[in-house]
Length: 438
Image (cartoon, rainbow, N blue to C red; front, side, top):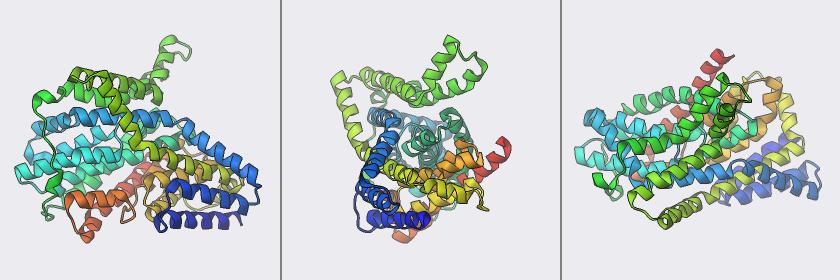
């Protein structure tokens, strides 16, 4: 019976979000209360579970998401991303522009939210396409694949980070494994598949051409790369050096602290405020206004995460999660494949990688203990599943179509297939990596 209730809950959730168009946070709350009652819980315990779920999910990630949005805003408005793109183009030339944008998408996508990276880099792709008479889709798709992979696989992006916290996984190892899985996924979905798209010569939307900044208006190459990569450098340094130091040593404690996502992102935002703000002639009031604006842009994410956390907690307190875990113990599917499949189905139905990832994590958490699988790889398998086949219920689908001016059918043949390859490549990478780790 708990599984029937859970299945109906997912279907109702999908219907509320996709068809009735209720806001995801409200849909999660309604479904959470209904599921609790159906499972025989009393009203007050249901409300306590909802409050606990919201608080537990948001408590560890609100600061990191807000800081990530702040860093992204400073990178976007200062011209740092344009500087990175221009530098990569100068290194490889227009003949290999797609490779430059692919690498730029990965670098810029590490600290930036997908939508910010898309709206930041797509105008640069369109501008280069018009200026050098290159097929925009051919040079742009590898960049979009990079952005999609970093969003789905790598912390400190919101969904992977929330899943990571829920599984008590190690952020450094998850990031390291994620990069190993990301590289072939980007090459397959971006470089290889993108190379087949030369025939799509439709001119992109000229209205989105970038307002080009002069050299003196952009930060230097070194400052741009350093500021964007600083959080990754801090986390990576901590992960690489800490195992070789005595646990109680002062230096080890400092490294562990620097490797914490909140600390690394805080340091990066403070540095960016100086390098991309104050040093670029902005006043402290201007920088503060940009940071405040950036948080407004991600406020709805907090509600979605909180709602997903509420449903997860009700399912846990109602005994559903344990029931699923008991059944999964006897499933013929590998745990990583099982988690990927669940995330992929929810993603295709709901259209949100964030909702898909967080919801799936709530179901498979008990499986981690019963199966003994690697939590860092489980984060990646769910992340890969959450990117599966973006279509008409995903805002990214329409954003891509509007910028690149494709028909519905061509958008499905290009964007949707690219996202599917991102998902399948990620699963394959996780399965291969699991053979080495285990």
